[in-house]
Length: 143
Image (cartoon, rainbow, N blue to C red; front, side, top):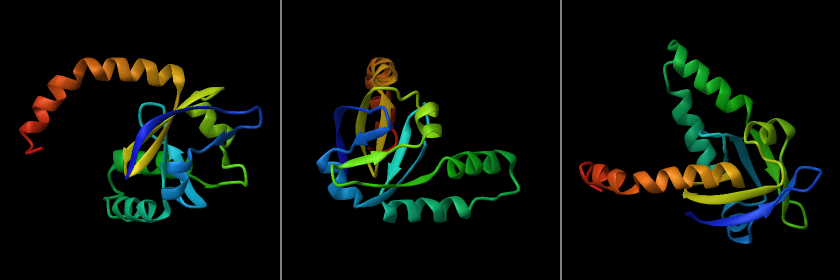
């Protein structure tokens, strides 16, 4: 399981150090893609396979399904950790997530999210305001 929040920087070549705790669970190669809320989603291979199977099972005749699947897979790339513990994030993913220098890596159970520090600060302050009401809603779902 992925959890925690780590601050790092991206160098001029688009390389980012992946925290050691995340590297252990992700392995040497893993998948990064465009996530929701303008962050990147990072999946270990086994979790990516599960997600891929679920998306393949969706009815491709529905326009919203086609649009989501196209967007999700077109942004996907295999990342490999180098000897310094870094990954290279392609320019299209850095641009989508507005990653320039300061980034936040967040563990979210089955995936890692990579955020620009500014977007994460904005998102987390808004989410914090909704945290209590969201928790109350989850109680109704049996959580």
